[in-house]
Image (cartoon, rainbow, N blue to C red; front, side, top):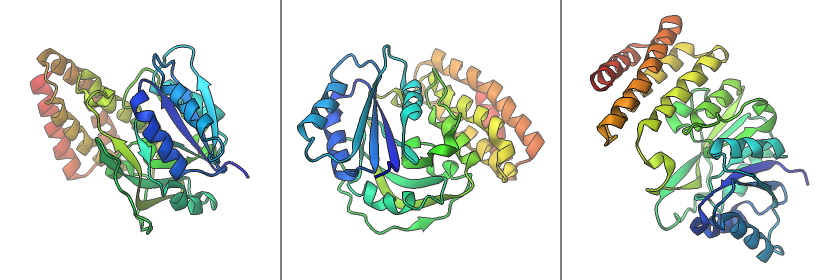
Length: 310
């Protein structure tokens, strides 16, 4: 059978979470039409070995295909995902983080969409958890409104979507950055001619204090930097240009307010100093493409906060 879905899974320092991930893959995508691309980002512990052992111990039950890529040195999440994209064979590509898990209904819910590939992007929901995996029995599918601006309403996480592989040519995650999903997702939606959004929660996202994005530091500026850059590079492809700029302006206020949660005053100052040039670039986009009154008010408040704290 042809591989219809490739799930790319970078693996690094998450050994304690691998058993739940692997069990969820066995329950949720156990078909030869799916491949899991594990990318070992030079793990300093046994994370990737646990993946290999699970596959070996369950070889008679596992139907999904598996590939393991080994990085010679640790290069981070973006590079790992980019390496996975190079070898993915699926008609659609998705992502899963190795400390998360998928719903047991993942494949059964999505197969009708990937077997009839009329959509460039297939989007679904997620549930957060900290300790115990959610008990998800949702099977009824409700299709919801979808457009190129979806990420501003449903968030930019790459793991809540499947992307048609042929559409992703030359789109890469930015190396050396965090919040890299902003950049990749904006580029993907700018190329999408048709997308579908369904109500089902198919990914379980683990909230943990030790994760990179849970630590609020000046690196949080990468979120705005990646988003503004991606919009500058893709806005010509998106019909709703004024609405896009308005959504960006609204997002800037949210990011300026969240920056106040950076506890270290010196680092907080660096955050606003890094954000201020990006706010100027947002204003340039607004002058060129327009925006609505709510967007303009949000942008003005963003600049006020940034000037006060930079």
